[in-house]
Every structure is written in structure tokens, then in C-alpha cells.
Image 1: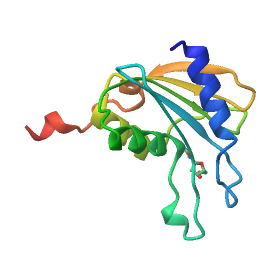
Image 2: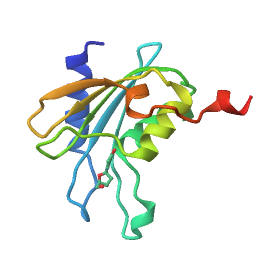
Image 3: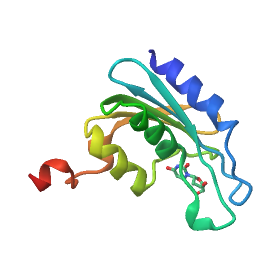
Length: 130
Ligand code: THU
């Protein structure tokens, strides 16, 4: 899977966002170690606390289908700035892949590449509990 292809899938998923409250659409595409790609969008709710981000939608789809190791994530938002994953998504992703490569994409489809360990330094994870 090329970076460009993964980003294209995230941009495509942004169209599926259910975001009537924030009107901020987000799409994500998460590539598992075996090459399978899981996509997700943000899904909001009238009870605001029930909203889920695009990245976590993709992650729970993947984990619920038996994938636990991931190599790359593309996340495409609706702003001029890149779509930086929220803190909860960073922590959820870190549980499975602390060294994940993350492509953050803006409204125009431009992107920047960062590592999850840079986004969430000195993180708490499964190894901490051992
Ligand atoms: N959102 C995401 O989907 N991913 C993020 O990392 C940041 C925020 C969504 C949640 C909510 O539906 C909307 O963007 C505004 O916060």
C-alpha cells in the first residue's frame, strides 16, 4: 500500500462522516501489518459524549477483526491545517502500535508525515503494567 493510496482512502472516507453537529468531517485509513486496510469516519451523536473519531472507528473495526499490529495511518480532516489526531486517539493507537507512522492530511489533500511516538512522547502502554 503506498502512502498516496492510503491518503486517498482517508479522503474518500471523509465523505462518509456523520458530523451534523460539528460539521467537521474526518476520514481515516489504517494499514495493518499484513497489508489489510481498515477505514473509518467520525460518527457524532445528539448526546455529544457518544461521538467517536474517525481514527478510533478504523481502529476498533480492525481490532474486532483480529488485527493488532499496524504500520501506517492516514487521517484527513476538514480544515486548512493538517488533521492532528486527538489525545484519545493517540492513546488508543499507542496501545497497539507505538511506532505507527501517521500521515496528517488537510482539506486540500496536502499532507505531512509524523510518528506516533512524536505525537505522544513518554506514553503509558501495556509494557508499563508489566
Ligand atoms: N475528530 C476526529 O474524527 N478525529 C480527531 O482526531 C479529531 C476530531 C472529530 C470528532 C468530532 O466528530 C469532530 O471531529 C469535531 O471534533
